[in-house]
View: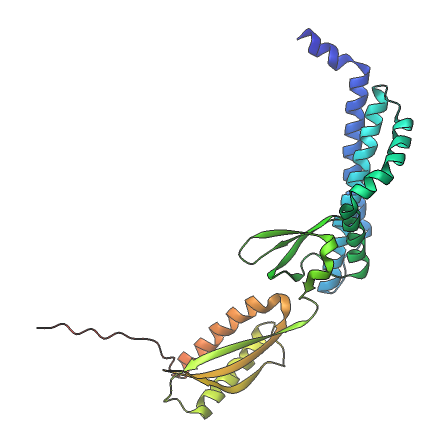
Length: 266
């Protein structure tokens, strides 16, 4: 117990704790200032870009403050930090050659931010994996799929990442309909449904009825195109299916389904 009290009374220990506390307070203050000075934009893209820049700057200052705090603590314990920094500078070339991939990640991270290649909230695709950008740093980018899986991608692989949010998407919906239903009636009902989809979802005026797509064994497949923002396609698709089903029920348009007839022998 006495040894523990002596450690707490040690001036070097007190200075180290003070430096750590100052570092935490400084980092918190910088975070607040960054969020105050980098204002949010009006459009969705500008808001996403602002969020990405804020996260990146926070990460940069976090590492800088961490390094400075470590140097102050080492200085307090008698380590010659000047010679240490000089030695790090000499060893930097050797380390740089050994960590080429890390340097590529850092450079690519800055490039992604400056060129607006993608921002937090964008929907991207990497090697067949599609999801939302949930975290962006200088070294890597984290993507979360609709099913909850998270993939971490090194920023140097930027050339393999496709941004799907900066373009619109066409959702092609095949609507199975009974053969006995007249094409004129189905067309009228689907056009009414499409008008409702446009007015009540984020689909736009490019959405349209395209006609008969295929003849199935038990139904006629009518094709509907729903045009909407790429990052909203799953939500819009679900809402569109609900609206189409509602209009079919309202107008007594039949959707065929498999039925099994069972005969019990007497």
